[in-house]
Image (cartoon, rainbow, N blue to C red; front, top):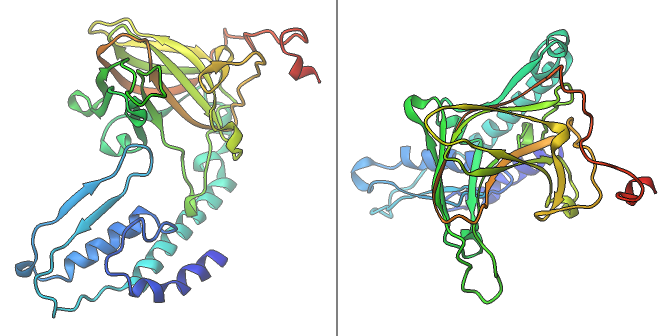
Amino acid sequence: MALVHKLLNGTYILRKCPKPSAAMCPFLGIRFADYCSSSLQKTTAPSKTSPQRKTGGGLQGHHQKEVALDITSPEEELEVSFDKAIRDEIKDHFRHLKDEIVNHWIGPEGRPLHEVLLEQAKVVWQFRGKEDLDKWIVTSDKTIGGRSEVFLKMGKNNQSALLYGTLSSEAPQDGESSQSGYCALISRIPRGSFARKRSYDWSQFNSLYLRVRGDGRPWMVNIREDTYLIQKKNQMYCYFMFTRGGPYWQEVKIPFSKFFFSNQGRIRDVQGKLLLDKISSIGFTLADKVDGPFFLEIDFIGVFTDPAHIEEFAYENSPELSPGLFK
């Protein structure tokens, strides 16, 4: 209720905003900025305005859009209802909150509990349209001044996602970095009502299941746990996925017990199990130091239970090797 009170009290300030954007209203998000921008377009006469000019943001999860309008007649007044935009945004969040509460009583994701307990396999991500691509972000060493490039688009017949680009291990000319050359695909953290962070619960499964088609390069599969501690933002669990190359699809099955713990790209001496009930995201990283083009086509990413796999953890946890676990 405090959030609703804050939003409603802020309408007086928003009335004085000449053009709404996600940067001006960070607590409402991109959707509110797009809503207000569309309202500006509708209230402007078509004969006195020029075409829209859209500018996109980066690919690091802070993707923002702004619409610029050239108004030739300053005498014409724009009538924009910010109160209605705020009310609609609040109603939409409360609608999502209601669905989450109802689904919680019915079962996980709104399904009966007995169906979830008997489930042996589950598709978490698949690529059948642009809305599926919006759940992912791509990044490369360009963020530190490198020359690698990476792109993501829909595959043939909209039945897969194609990750492609060029890897370059040339170090940036900044006088600080001595190594470079990586490209990555990372899933966005799921969000609930009022932009609350959510996580995936894979505790009833024991293996990761992918259907991919690559060019023979090795990829690092990274899984992150949900955490609110900034000290753990660089911690993840990793394992290698080797693609065959060629025109044929391959099914990759990686037990969760094989994932090893790393921090800032370094394998830690103290290893521990991956907590499968608090998964925030999954990613794929290419950093094999082989300059040149690459591609990775993904059909779907899922989890399943392999009854033949009984291993709980693949790495030793003796007091000599991992003293931190036995304090």
